[in-house]
Image (tube, rainbow, N blue to C red):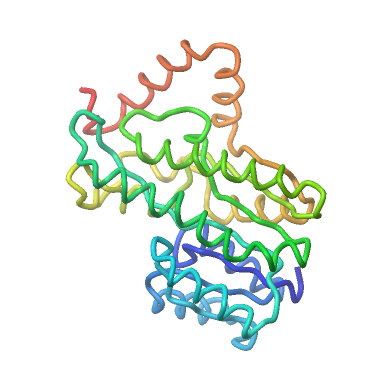
Length: 268
């Protein structure tokens, strides 16, 4: 990965931060994108990265003007794009009956449209370099998770979009990776939106029992190197996807029962 030009959205925390640190240590040219540029500066200092090989671009991926500036600034500084990692994302926790529709729209804007905007704008450069487009999806992109309607919908949409992108460019050398982590110990649940759009503020799950962002990043970087089509992480995630192919009704009940055990579950 040395001297590759890598753009990472949502790079200020969680999987995005871990990916950024991994690429910086590998001496790649890393472009960090997130809404909070101060956090991005802290990551660079914490990693002791070569500042000449790092570009910080304050970016709200729901804003196409921001996404254009992200790509333009990358080309201006580094002259090419080898890898785009669409990692920016938010979640939600509310049943459809009680959720404000603006919450679902917000989740779709970040998770789906953010991926579409950045990928579309970076695509000519990625085709030129025969580079990699990475979408950080989720097991929720295979199986709908109750109380996460907007989140699951956005991840299903991301996977469909990236599959089409891969097929359309099958003869152009473009690599498309769909990465599907299971539950990962990050701040996504702390920042998840409730039914009225406010932040949840605390995780309803035991974060200590989840895969670490660093481990997820390690697996994703290795998958990019091997130009894999998709990866499904965690044994629970792999089992869910496999069982859902053959016993979807059974998995419906299993998923409901599992999610109902969360503290303050909306199903209790």
